[in-house]
Image 1 (cartoon, rainbow, N blue to C red):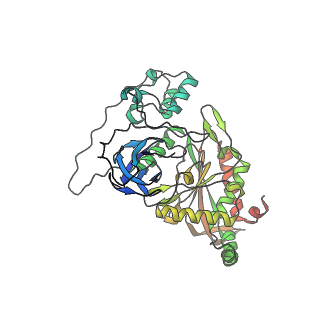
Image 2 (cartoon, helix red, strand yellow):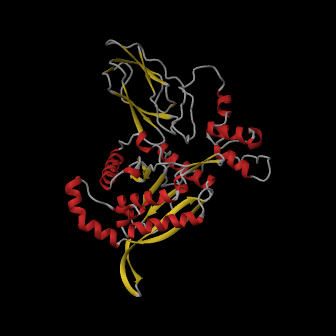
Image 3 (cartoon, one colour):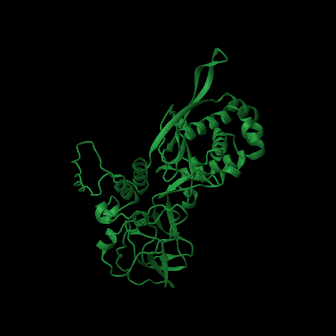
Length: 411
């Protein structure tokens, strides 16, 4: 008999929900045949059969929460299966994102430890911060994590309070009655995670946004002049995103705090740029990462972004595609946005927002000209990035886009 195990789910992902079994107990399966779909906070993962045989038992029913290494079911050799075993309850496992690499999460526990004791334990990042700061669970009070567990955000909120006493938790608000014409639908894990992470960014970061505007004329002229030759040589179209990735990389090298993150009372600087590119998928916004974007050419950037866009539309993004970003670019302009204030993607300290290109009258050398202009925005964590750095960063991006030769000469 061979166990079917939950695979490693990737950085910052510690649990998954059994979304759908593709086989029933008693059915024959081939080696590497997809057996079950797991829905994580980020993507859907298929678990394949580790060997050929018969699906003997399903240990985790649809809807169950499972952690890496947990047993989903078992496969028996031969052509007949034993009677299906009842689905076993799988404890919920949740951990926050680790800064320095993937988190090792044990499989679902099988001992007899009381569930209440597990639920009361602070999340690992919170426990680490509590140990470093001397905060205790009694002073912090009820946590905002699942099952009342204390999160890192709870500890930060406690440390920011002037009084050590924990406030009494508010009673949960009951769901209101549904009126005629309304429909109540449970959030998907991806949508719930987006909501939680965006609110986490607002709660934990001192978020501020600075704006500027860019004359896109030079970049548009360069693109028009070379787009056919570029596509013929590299097999991919030349878009504006590669210009902005290159410009952001150059600015991040000059202002490394925008590419850094806070871990406790320390700042983690990065000697690389893993550029997240926000793309809309069928299930919501996802941010695949251009790893080592600082070493990629224009063609490599465009090819990678194009591949990510196709994978997002097909729902084929993998966890590794989304892990480890150090800075993010989002382009609301493709949807017609003229100006916005993008929200940080924790634990990153900066996100660059692109917007719609619009012809506007501008004063150029004392004369009014109609120029193709774009508003750009940088949202940043003011705890680590000073206003001068943020404004200067955005000016560097503006200068690079308005004179693309700077990107070619790395100046």
